[in-house]
Image 1: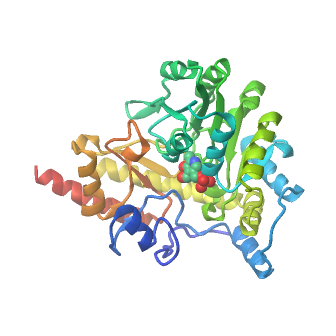
Image 2 (image 1 turned 45 degrees about the vertical axis):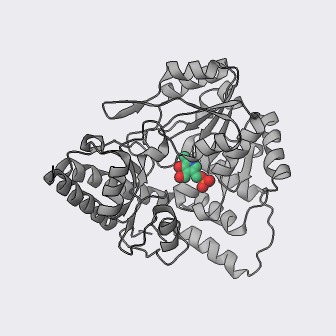
Length: 401
Ligand SMILES: Cc1ncc(COP(=O)(O)O)c(C=O)c1O
């Protein structure tokens, strides 16, 4: 089946965090029907048909009781996907259900470190990592990414300094990286992983975006690099970004190390009572992994074209803005620094003057100042409208100087 991703689906009257008026009012303090939201990382596209059919069938059953997911059907869907798409042979026993990756990361911090311990993150990065560390009473160590010639790389020397600290217990890797769009190479990951092994730091690899890879790039699942890496890592995966199922609250944490797995299951199931998925998430995930590949290929092509037209638009019309070439995800990271605005002024320009809601770079921590993150998983017409609005206000700003 051919999907029509150009179709604009009105989400304003739903509970959508990205689109609903009440959510926009809460997060942007703005009431304006004309505001274009390209912030939250979900897609404005319809889901794969097999997913919709599976949910409808489940709904038609008319009984929505408790579920038991640890069945061959569920485990084969997850392990089959990892094998087919990522050449990773996952043992059925390694798969642990979690309602989300953010809750899982919080619970891993609780399980594998103590209050006062240190956790490394790499800003600019997905901001719930910061709160997961701080709200659990751990100390945040920021190993800022290097930014040179509009490309991001790891700062290994600084990373090793931080990993050496005897209080450092965990490193949270974002792979592919939200928001900078890097798909880390095997060599880059190996260097970080060797440092983690040497200093006994647990690697939590958040790979929620690992199916969203642009042509010419290759994602390496961290734990496939070596058996030692496999035993010292937890890989966070989900169908939520891949198939646009975030609201259905189903993700899978893959933990090859038996002792670590038992400790995590104890936290997630026994201490927090979170072992039971909802039936819609379950059937959606199974349908997506088993029958959603064709949709994924189509959506990746569409996202690739949106990135391409965004890049061309910026090069032609917005020479003050630098488009950071993404290698994965559906999030573009735009450098507005040459406009010379502070964060408040930049926010005012985009939100109030252009009437477009993006994620402010400063939310992503060190190195995010002067940037904006834009979600391109939307119909091309919406993306174009947003960019025309931004072009207009940047032109006005330049004309007023
Ligand atoms: C890197 C990363 N991790 C986790 C999440 C959210 O995960 P979940 O909705 O499963 O908690 C996101 C969503 O944008 C993300 O970008």
